[in-house]
Amino acid sequence: MIFAPTSIEELADILGEATARRQTLAVTGTGSKPGLGPGGADARLDLAGLGHSIRHDPDELLLTASAATPLAEIQAVLARAGQCLAFEPPSPDAIWSGGDGTLGGTVACALSGPRRPFAGAARDHVLGLTGVTGRGEIFRAGGKVLKNVTGFDLPRLLTGARGSLAVMTEITVKVLPLAPAQATLRIAVDRPAAAVSLLAAALKVDGGITGAAWVDGAALLRVESTAAALPALIDAARARIPGGEVIEDTGSRAIWASVGSLAGAIGAEEIVWRCPLPAARAPALVAALPDQAVVRLDWAGALAWVILPPALADCDVHAAMAAAAGRDGHAERLRGPASAVPARLAPEPALAALSARIKASFDPAGILSPGTTPGVTA
Image (cartoon, rainbow, N blue to C red; front, side, top):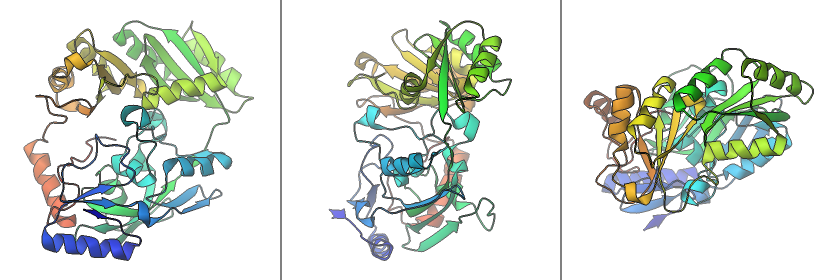
């Protein structure tokens, strides 16, 4: 059974009736992120019928759009104004082959790209939203101003909740100017420990750096600025980090599209894990994994992408993470076949109890996105 509301009032009625019947609903947009979406449910709640709308105020650096609006449309509108979503949401298409998804799915899953350490996470840029709780109650949270601290900070709470607390219908985000020019400094570094050390050293001095990664045996530093200032910033970075080559403009943008979304980096059958952790512990994670594992580091080492061949479907990345970072990191399998190793571990008892109390406040009957675990970090 599929429910496809065309208005927020109809959505509220559907959720209210589902709560009364204890009917679980899989909340979906375009279905671009199945590895993060709901488990089995009695029916599917398709939000595409809520329509596409975009209201962009470039002078105030604000954009409000319906949650069902395709992310590609929003990025095109912003690009024409020389602006962007500063948390650089990565496309999920390379992992799941389902397109770029919608604004609602982007916020619900809160996956931030390479600019996260420099511009903030997804939840730092969501200012307000409208939605419906599992009780069928319409609500509005936050606002369209940069300072709004009245009541609970529901935009932050719902960002990353993966549709398990409420259904978002309209979202207001802060946007920022898009740097007109960029280049990437690529330095060959074989060992992850040396790469993390190099990236940390490069970030000690502000020089327009907006990306720091380790991919395929090379440390990558992205520098963004105006076309006039970029050469001097590149020279300053090379003075701190001798050696390497400079990749400019189109080539640089292609590199960071791959860093953020794994575009061109994974085969159709390969298994993908996402592992946030302290950057200093990333080398220990690499050491704890089998030699066949391919590890790519983003966020200056604080996000590890682990890519495994099909033969390693039962590789316990959770155990490797525990050995490397203890409670300070976590692993989540985004794509891969059924395995004795769970895609994600159950939260610790105290966190589980807190999550259950929050869930009961928004969705007491537990109808929304059953089996979904909110993201631990964005």
